[in-house]
Image: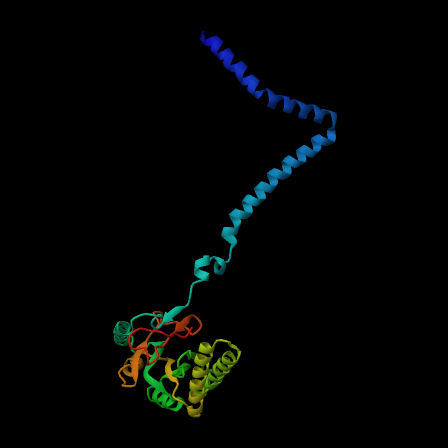
Length: 276
């Protein structure tokens, strides 16, 4: 077969393949000629489609340039979790304390007068009056108190001192303890299992005895969040009443963006409670 024959065959094949498209185009043109209104509609549709694509493209391009700076934040950054001060649940306490003592010592040397928030954790539960005297003597401003009654199942609570005293914080846990007592008594009354009833009743008696022993200013404070300088906090960490002092990584940290989790006196090996 010659080259001319091959080219002719290819052209014929292409014309056959294009025939359906050509026929459809021919029918459309014929309809347009018969119906002028259709030609106007199609021309307008073409202009609208092209204009819309141009507008959308421009808007997408401009949005990145005109977006306010405060909105140019990644979702991950906006949803970042709170910074944490204090060991996590299950974390070994002693290694954590050693690390934090080193951090405080370095901060006190490099920036002794620098202000910061800090978590002061005590060796034993303290009353509000005892805690107030201790903090005033060292120039520490208390912001929140972490309290707990030392009975099984009692959870620690964080009390804001914005409108309350340390004595209010230490004694206010009575209300929570009373609510837990009422819940235990209700469970004991409603359960049909003798074993569960005995457990609930035993715990309820323990809570009731604890409530009866609570003084107006009971020893329930085990940690406080304070504001002070690095030098004052380093000195405070050496007091015999203090287990350790913990600092946020960021010196500009606030109560709103930081979780402070103290360690209760019973936690001698790993942290089991945390204020959240």
